[in-house]
Amino acid sequence: MDIIKRLSKILDKDSLLTKKEELIPYSRDASYFKGSLPMAVVIPNNVMQLSEIMKICYEEEVPVYVRGAGSSLTGSSVPFEGSIVISMLKFDKILELDIVSRYVIAEAGVRLENLNAYLSKYGYFYPPDPASSIASTVGGTLSTNAGGLRAVMYGATKEWVLGMEVVLPNGT
Ligand SMILES: Cc1cc2nc3c(=O)[nH]c(=O)nc-3n(C[C@H](O)[C@H](O)[C@H](O)COP(=O)(O)OP(=O)(O)OC[C@H]3O[C@@H](n4cnc5c(N)ncnc54)[C@H](O)[C@@H]3O)c2cc1C
Image (cartoon, rainbow, N blue to C red; front, top):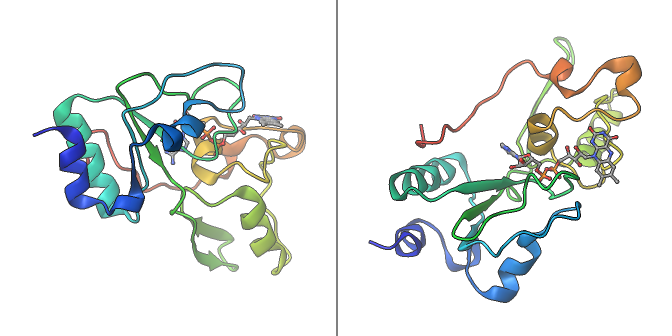
């Protein structure tokens, strides 16, 4: 079965973009690199859907590009032709804050600015700030180990990660 058909069985039509005008914004990021149009952009709602998408792409041997905000300056989220872009747009929830143990659990698509707006209510902040915090996401900055000006004092992103729930390429 064709991959788009398989994806359409698990995603509603607003979460599976295939029209040219829908794909164009995902063919670029904040760098100068020009990508190609992906085959489709998928916007999963939850981890189960994300796992299923990864499994399908793995079985169909189709490359995937995960996309946070596309604020990368290195072209790392720019796709090649025939690939699938997975947008983390809907993973935008802050799940837990533990003041005593000083940790916060946030989904991969949470923008750093939103995370800091939330933490500021409790008198805390999340130090990684790659000057793109208005857009960049927890997942994207983790993937790039983003630094920024505050890294001089607080270190880069990897210093601030206690654990991760990850979906592997085969969907597990
Ligand atoms: C104005 C500006 C200033 C900047 N200044 C700095 C700076 O001072 N220091 C610095 O380090 N960086 C800087 N950056 C770049 C910064 O690293 C990126 O903005 C940010 O880290 C990428 O986050 P994003 O959510 O936009 O990810 P994207 O650009 O969407 O993706 C970046 C990479 O992460 C991967 N990815 C995204 N989300 C996930 C996920 N959930 N799971 C797995 N992989 C994922 C993508 O596939 C891609 O490889 C700057 C960018 C801008 C635009």
